Image (cartoon, rainbow, N blue to C red; front, side, top):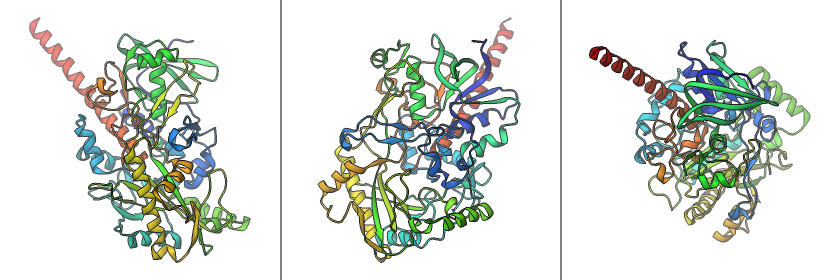
Length: 553
């Protein structure tokens, strides 16, 4: 192994937060920044076509293809967890839905002992990164690099869903990231001019020519280098060769709820008993590493339609596929410009207090899985998920081998509130489907079927078919007290260690109420600001010490 390359900052993980963070830090030409990504560069055209996720999810070249251990409350099934393994991370293969979460989510974070993370603190960060297609407003920015726009959708079925939601009692809401989240309406997507706006495209694109920013793909960080309580560098691997990089200032883990957790544990940072059981020598005890895992579970209501107005029909046949391709190539419109869901809603079940506790995703299509193809009949899907689950799981390594997959136990439906909320959310989805605007074109339920009516029957269906919406978080939780399971402080510094921060969804004290990509990018923006602020404070302190020394002399 050669002598280590040295940089001021090393960012580990080129995903939603990492691409932005490396870009922000390298804006200072005096600093050298290294961004390390385990996956390849994002050269495949399907990574830039919005509906290309049908081609990239479950593709082992771009997807880690994680799965949980058998889930006790889901009939012992292993649940698929796609995660991006490419420059841009999951923002390069996700469904593109742009949802920030509720203002109260972030106020809750601050109230848990995390100053600087209230809604008034994070809104400027959301606005700073956003290139909102609708223009600047109190809630939106238009000068950032992350494309956010309304997809060019003109589908009868989508309009019918929105109207059915209104008929079912949800208010119309044209902006789920505006003054309130509650209601039904179209989703905005992270696209720009009809192309996916991944974190790599949005942020790294303009920065790749900077001489002080080095981007390495195909490099897997295996462990951190510690010198006592100081983190000095990282040990990595590319192909069969070992690599060693050192940081003068700091290393920031942005590898996500799974990756950042795994790197910490492989480095001997975590629960000493769990580490010893996995064959790793404990170096720094932090009991919360790998704990407090949360994710959104969804249950899907599939409808069989009377009319051929779904994408099942509109995309069938070689001529239709040819026209779809030409429409996208020449106009950036049509099916290839769509995200995973085109409309949705946020509602309250009888168990909610003062804000929505369930989210709906509407798809004008039906399928059993992304790699299984669309159904041969006209179909549509309404999925319902609980926004703020109580259930918590774990992610633990089982071996010192960095190539061994960690053991993921999501522990879905572990509490009575979670089970009851999922049942009520499913009932609300049915109520929307039964409203006149949709009922006029619905022939019946494909799944689960009208004979599934009681709470027990609905719960059995959820246990048999429920799936993840791919929002893992919380495994390196932010908070002031490592004794209660907190891993990083409010400045994202790992408790008890110097030179190491974490900036990704793993730091969420509680899962946000909605899709997580926007919040992950915001976390990267806040991390960049904090790193710059803390560096300036440290420099000022050094100047003060020098001045005092001069006076004494």
